[in-house]
Each structure stands twice: as structure tokens, then as C-alpha cells.
Image (cartoon, rainbow, N blue to C red):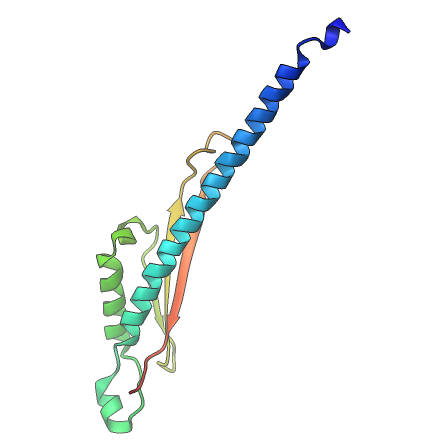
Length: 140
């Protein structure tokens, strides 16, 4: 009986540590979700701006709204550059106009290092978070 004396506080300390790690992982998860939402919002704004880059000569001649790839890329990059989160990107924004010039896809990527759990053996580098948006030109 004397060998088990004082074992309950040890168990409570272990349980408290496990709960603390679970809370830290939850906080990291919500931070990553927030960063992803920010990237998706930035990509969405850039895609909408790029979708407004209609080739006017083609539109006047045929009435069909096709994208001007160079103008779409410059508009999308301008929106990303003016966004507050645009400086934290880990790679250059990917702006891709479809071959048929009927859609534009914007892809943004950011590296999110771990904060609270970086000292755990499972936490090495962090996460790469990606936000993607697709937009289509609109003919009036």
C-alpha cells in the first residue's frame, strides 16, 4: 500500500499535460484554418478582378466575353500585392487563364510554422496552406 502513495498527483499532472497539448493542437488548427480562409478570400478577390479583364476587341466583334490573359494576370497580381496578406506568401501567385479563355484560376500558397506545439517531436516545419479560386468572365 505504501508503494502507491502519491501516485494520484502524478496521474493528474500527466492528464493536465495531455489536455494542454490537445488545447495547443486545437489552437494551431484554428490558426491554420484562419490563414486558409484569408488566402481563399485573397484568391477570390484576385480571380474576380482577373475575370474582369475581357478582350474588348473580341467582345465587340463577336459579343462573346473572352479573357485577355496578360491583362488578367496583371490585375490579379495587383490585387494580391495590395492585400495585407500578400507579403506572407511562400511562392509567387499562380495565375492561370484556361486555354479557351473562359476562366481564370488563382492559387496562393503560404507556409505556416507551428507556434504552440513546435517543441513536440511531431512538429517539424509547419504546414503549407493553399487558397484557390476560379472566376469566369460575365457578358452583359
